[in-house]
Image (cartoon, rainbow, N blue to C red; front, side):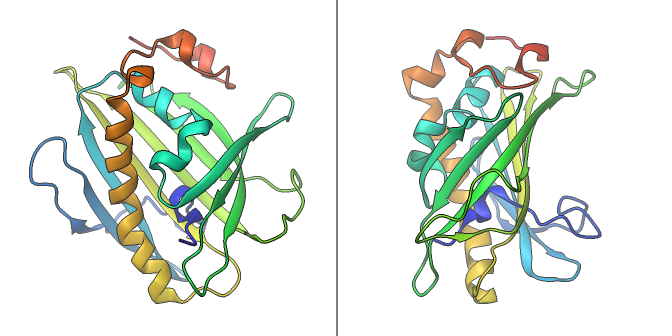
Length: 223
């Protein structure tokens, strides 16, 4: 699907994660994904948000969302990703399948890591990066995006994972299709993340298994 929608809110007058979310899918039990959508000022495309609680460590979750080689296994419609060599920064080129008649999309993301010292929440924030990689044959470049994964440790050993996204997909994409993806991307992505967490590579992840991203050394993590 055209969906670079997966990693992406267009930065408009109001941030995509402001308020006025409407429940789109309600999880029935703890460990199920709940999703939301909301209107965004000056855009016909809706923002989306997904939340799931998992019995895992924050380190394990962070290991999943930074392992670019496995992105096609769980990120909705991702067909591949690779890290780019940019000194002092974390930038990733991601490619996404299109839904007919929409062409495949790609995007270059600049990632930053931060942590709230009061709550322990870790945020991986991604925005589109300009001038890093030229146009790729067969892909429409996503012109604007903003996305964040928020990993929050809970008192009972569970972790809440939330990600919020809106995208300007660029090119010609029917609004109904963009908004259809907004209903599926958070659900299928977070469901995929929970499956990844069951694999030994991630279930047993420690700090030494994490990539040396900018800001990683400043995070307070428990394995």
